[in-house]
Image (cartoon, rainbow, N blue to C red; front, side, top):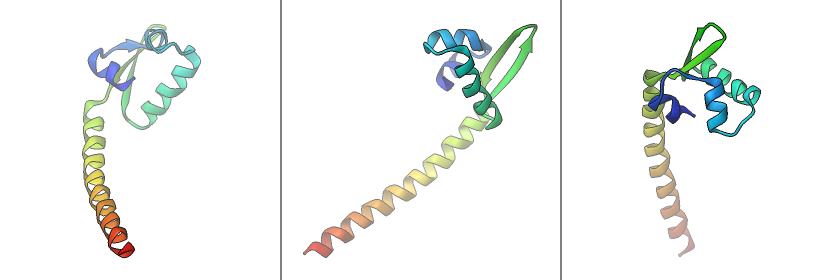
Length: 88
């Protein structure tokens, strides 16, 4: 859904629901959570709610995940080596 909103900003909830084969109330609940997390923004035009991905917030999340992925990958590799050595 976020990738869709990045490539097509200003997409309505109804359009997203049709693309993801989801009931609109279900999709709206997901969008509300993404909005609360700051990952999407909403613009109301009449009865339509248009959503855009928040690129800055997604970039910050990606940076955080990259840092933590590197830490955990290294930690798990060290743990694996330790366990392998302990078996000898």
